[in-house]
Picture 1 (cartoon, each protein chain N blue to C red):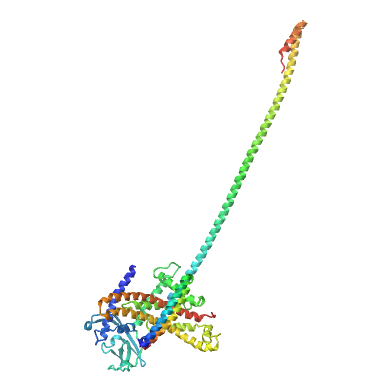
Picture 2: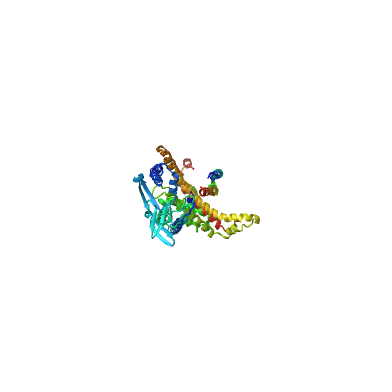
Length: 66
Length: 361
Length: 165
């Protein structure tokens, strides 16, 4: 239970950092090139979904264990 | 602004009875420990499917009044159909008899039992009685049918407005038309490509609006909303499997070659890469399934937890803060409802787009 | 919370069937007509825009043609006015010069006539003077020739009186 919680926390840190960096990069790119905004948005969402996927597997494991 | 205030006020008022009913129900469930409030029970009760649709209840103990709609139960047990209403389950023993078979209702699941209601448990206290095939028209099924009725009514009436010569859109038509166009042009055509997109447009449009409206119905805090339909794994699994099938049935030759043979890559790497690619075929829809389910369920859990704070702390002065917070969360969830529908549709379109591409990029 | 991850066959069954029917119905009665209408509208708008473009071009052409016509008309008018003015000038000049000639001619002929009349008058006068002189001479001869002296006096007297111009 505690190790699961610890692992979950670590994964959440990782995923949070990942999505944060992704958002930062995307925002900067959007500010620099507003003309490709929609493409950047799509690419950002896809990348976010992939990162989120990792966090989701953590949720699954947490649900199975706890 | 006025409208927004109205919505907030409305949510405040409508959240109160839900909280109250959940509370008294939790108390009813735990006769021995009437003073202690366990939010987990409330949450589990709320996010699970049910064979009865609870409308509202008031009072406590003996005076408790429950207004609920018993739903039809359809069971297949040893090749025999059983069809009866939930109300046949005895209020105290939770046992129902139909054509000589006995069924026990325990925490939202129907088990086989005998006239005395014999149960067998494993060492963890879980029931291990055999289960009949349960095809009951549960709360989630009715909730889904409600959404389907709304969708059909909405879009067929919109479609009728397009009869005749082209003219400026009016009313709901002007609200949905840009959304339809956005999904068609900016999601589907963008990801799949102009020539092949038309085939998938009906499925993806339906998918988007189906997920969206069910997410929204799930956020309505009173009857007939509030069911955790899109947060149920069975539902997201069905949707993810349909996307998986659509993707792979329409997979082009180069897609399969790319996946199964990985051309142009050293054979040592191939040994690692090909299994990864094959696992990837299944992890993509799996992530779709878990993402939608986890997001929606988490939203429900957070809102109920915030309302439960009042009862956990046993302090009426907490209620303004907890209700304000849950209203904020509800507004956030409205956004999440749209976002998850968008993400599910976008990723489905993306997977389909990758599969139908005939030329290597 | 592992119950969250256990699919329920009943719900899977109903969801599959209902969603399938929903896709079918919406495809037939909603998406089909809506997307068709949107496509038609898009095409109509495109066609209308093209038609408007064409009409605009035509109008521009017409404006250009009108401008050209106006310009040419104006030029023509200017030309005509110029010509007319020149013609007027010429006519006036012609009239003036011919009148002058006529006048000159008239004056000339009047002058010659006057000259001729004068000459004729002088001639006549000379003739008359001669005749009168002869008459006088006769008379004198008749009356005065009786005295030589007197004859001479008379002749002188007449001759003094007659003044030739």
